[in-house]
Amino acid sequence: MSNIEQQIEAIASDVTRGEAGKVDREGAFPRGTIDALRKSGLLGLLTSKDHGGLGGGPREAALVVERLARECGSAAMVTCMHYAGAWVVEKLGTDEMKKQVGAGEHVLTLAFSEAGSRSHFWAPVSTAKKSGDKVALDAHKSWVTSANHATAYIWSSQPVEKEGMSTIWWVPAKSSGLNPGQGFDGLGLRGNDSTPVKAEGVTGAHMLGEDGAGLDVMLGTVLPLFNAMNAACSIGLMEGATQAACAHASGTMYAHLSHNLAELPTIRAYLARMRIATDQSRFLWLEAIAAMEQGREDTMLRVLETKASAGESATYVLDLAMRVCGGAAFRREVGVERRFRDARAATVMAPTTDQLYDFIGKALCGMDVF
Ligand SMILES: Cc1cc2nc3c(=O)[nH]c(=O)nc-3n(C[C@H](O)[C@H](O)[C@H](O)COP(=O)(O)OP(=O)(O)OC[C@H]3O[C@@H](n4cnc5c(N)ncnc54)[C@H](O)[C@@H]3O)c2cc1C
Image (cartoon, rainbow, N blue to C red; front, side):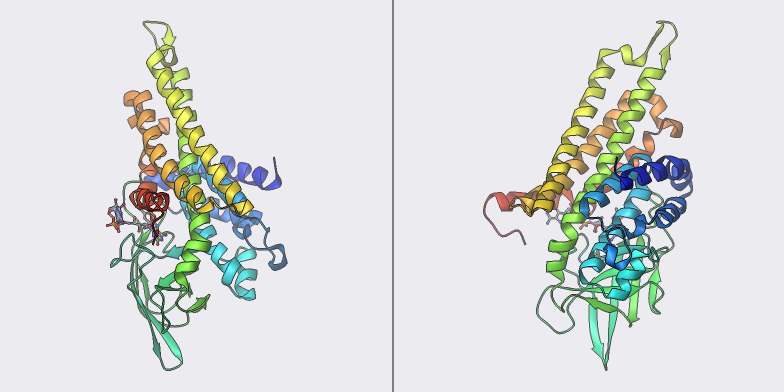
């Protein structure tokens, strides 16, 4: 096991597992996990060693997110969004930003989705308008994970003056004119603190990359890593649920028959299907990461496939986990119903599964994807 794997194993089993129930019940931010990541240096995982980080890449980030997701979907999603933002900073940020991120001084997130263009993150309708020597941002962001806990948002808007679909910004969370909502009250990932954020005349943002070049950043920098980490969330949830369902089936007795649930062939067959679907997703995920590392021609296809495949498989595997564990699955202590709820989000997080199917289909037919 690498050093990073040992560190995340310790955090996931000593901290994340312990707070997962409270995070879900109370909709609490996974503070213990984020503090432990900071303390271990893992918040700065993607920052180069020159800037004080650990110098990791997409593989390490995806492994961290997968391990956390086995214990707590919310902690995994918050970490996924932080790393997505940190990766943009690593590619396009100032030295000062990189040093701060490398030192673990920031919790970052993506603020791409908007009330106007909804899941079509590539087409922001929010604006960045010049007023004198300043630029003012106005927006109605629809979903921002960690909205009330982030220190800076990686933000999209229409370009200031150049052609193009978007421009990317670093927006300090304390900027005046920024208004995050009251926290998240929803079905799953209950601790992810994803809320709408309004911006009215926000100044002091720092442009990341060129004005008008946001789509290249979204597709070239964010999407491959984000898809690999979002798939990691789904795979971790499947892994956690499969292990919990096996433990439940092996440890639950029919007293009048003197055998356990696992003696039923139907139950064993469901567990086998869960294992197969989880492993299929894992192999495609590892293949997508390998394609990214090797700069292969099939990289974009694989990163589109891995999020769609893992997201859909997670809903299938979690449905089966609920079936295997019967009525007991409806109780929190079995550890299945929380993952069942958490697993639903990936399919509608942009790029949504339906969009991914469309993009993949277009690519297969030689059509332009965007
Ligand atoms: C828990 C959670 C956390 C999130 N965190 C963040 C975050 O940190 N930052 C951020 O920017 N966003 C975030 N999002 C937003 C997410 O990425 C999506 O933008 C959002 O879920 C889309 O919801 P919507 O209601 O706007 O979807 P809609 O756009 O209204 O989509 C509704 C349905 O139409 C389908 N659809 C839409 N377009 C197409 C198409 N072209 N082809 C086929 N089907 C299509 C969709 O797949 C979906 O099933 C988060 C979402 C969730 C659920």
